[in-house]
Image (tube, rainbow, N blue to C red; front, side, top):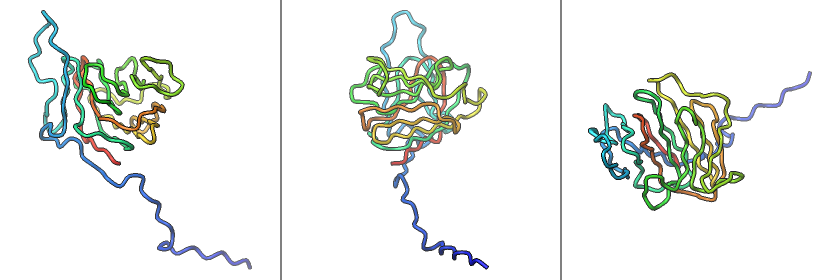
Length: 206
């Protein structure tokens, strides 16, 4: 009769090192402490904007979509994993999630954007060079087939991992895009461009 090898004591098994040691809540659900924003100048003869572009509504970060611009963290992040939830408030229009935003605020900033506009969902748009992508405005098509977004009004889960310049973006557990850049850090932000969007549960691990 062949004896089975003894199972190792669970207590003696090596415990894998966690990839990240710190977790930070970026949005407290009460105010915009820790965030700054930049907006386009008013357009002459345009319909006046009557609501704040960025506000806190029922514990959520509300982005009205008008005028164009973005809100970003005050803090710069290097290697990290960004996690959050977002949903359209009304119809799907345009919007995006930024990582690696660089110094020099302007309406169309230097950074990498995960596009969440319906017609271009999952694209990486970037003013930062991406490997094997033609510039100077870099557009990298999504890797997934179809749109992994949930029906309008439901929350979508996003995870963007930044490691040694490699970006990996997942939406609702589906890999939507990957890219390699020479940049190793920057601000995190959300775009305002035409459509009302809400964000919540915004955290970063590093």
